[in-house]
Length: 146
Picture (cartoon, rainbow, N blue to C red):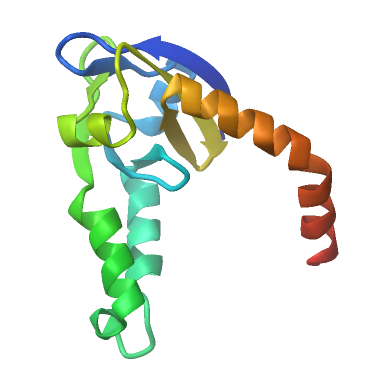
């Protein structure tokens, strides 16, 4: 399980080290893609296969006929990149993804059970503060959904 919050630097070549705790679980190749809420998602190859299957799944297997599915699939698949961890556990963040969330010299790396999220530090702090204030309401909603 991927859990925890870490701050890592990004070098001039767009390389960022992943937390040592995550490296073993992620493997040598990962998928990095635009995420939701102004972050990037990192998936293992195995988890990406599950996500891909769910995103393209429809009874007729003609998911491209739905405008919403087409749009979201373009968002997720079209801007995704397969990257390899180097010998010291760094990944190369593609420039278009780095620019998408305005990363500069550092990033917050967050383990979220089955994926890793990469955040701009300032955006993460604002988001975290907002969610902490809403945590009671969120728990209530999630608890009553069962």
